Image 1 (cartoon, helix red, strand yellow):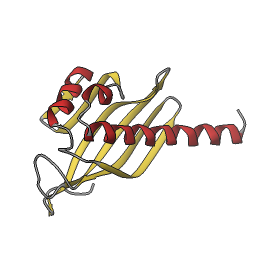
Image 2 (spheres, rainbow, N blue to C red):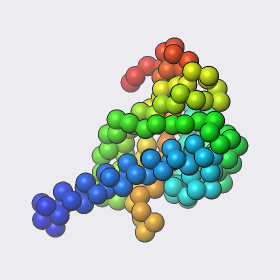
Image 3 (cartoon, rainbow, N blue to C red):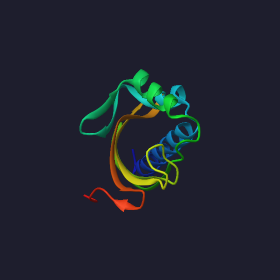
Image 4 (cartoon, rainbow, N blue to C red):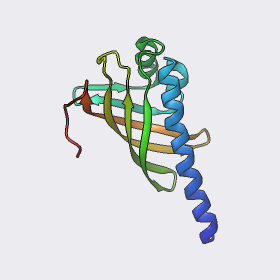
Length: 142
């Protein structure tokens, strides 16, 4: 593969991953647990805190569906994505002005791992780290 083809492949992978995170937000807002869970690999998990890990697509679908439509309106920004073949890692900031736990919303970070397959890029894991809740700092930016 020449340099141009490698560059195009890298840019496509990064764009596909950004689209994946945008779909995640869309399905979370709509509380569409089935569609959101389909964005994950079979061996997936979401870590919401050190003692709160949701494993598997069925559990993720149930978590998202139970939130209620419009109870969360996440907005993703500041992607940093590293691609290594069919695997990738990334971070992004997530914020929402609406949250079931917080009337003033939150700001947090996702630390993600992704895998490319015949179904396209999918999340393997999402690790959520809360930074600001109701306008108050609750975590460190590390």
